Length: 248
Ligand code: NAP
Image (cartoon, rainbow, N blue to C red; front, side):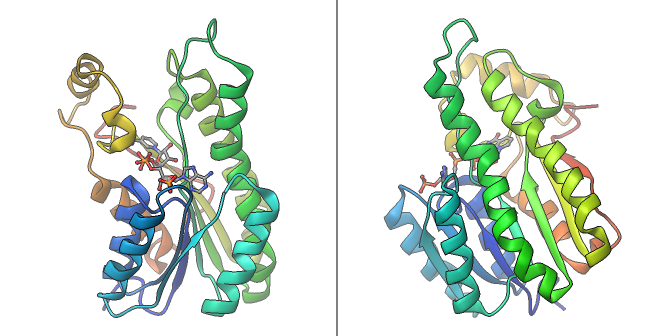
């Protein structure tokens, strides 16, 4: 039996990296997948075809997760196309790293908008349909740096810490309606986002990890499958680190 058979998921930012890995794992586990992208249009169209090859229903939407109105429209369109959404994965995110001394207001605002406001936008839009269904699982992709901070990433760390507070608050607000809300805190996962880092930084990261390797997108996707599935039906308000022991 596939772990997500009969469920439908909406995943933001699935054209690349972790989001793409989650979409593929979800399809492999039998879920129908609605997903978004913003600039990577071709990659989005390719992913739609790859997902359909698993024999599930898949559809990509070009939608800016940081735009409140667009998030509402996206959820309405996905409900029209798929009838219901059982799982929301708030994965879309960006970095605009800089030391505070050099950080611009624009770098702060862009990160807060794409990483934190997006989670509010999508969660707010999905709440009504999930309340009607009396079930749902919301999974927010935070980061270990949202727990421990990171020099040069005060904007990113603040956005990821904000996600954790939001996740726990929503778990408290919606638990009585059988809607769960959990966060995942990935450590150093090797994707395009981390490929932008210099090699020396990457070596320092790897060496500081007890399991002595960077994580893969599958490492994160497996945890997202668990939190989306009924295997985790008594788990809400939690932050699950997928970091090779980095936070220990
Ligand atoms: P990535 O390779 O840069 O991919 C980011 C994805 O988010 C892309 O699909 C991008 O779509 C999408 N996106 C960005 N802004 C968006 C917006 N406003 N609306 C809709 N989609 C948007 O990043 P990643 O490494 O896979 O990271 C995915 C998530 O995991 C992020 O939230 C990140 O903060 C978190 N995370 C990553 C790591 C890591 O080590 N990689 C560690 C901890 C947490 P387009 O390409 O179409 O623009």
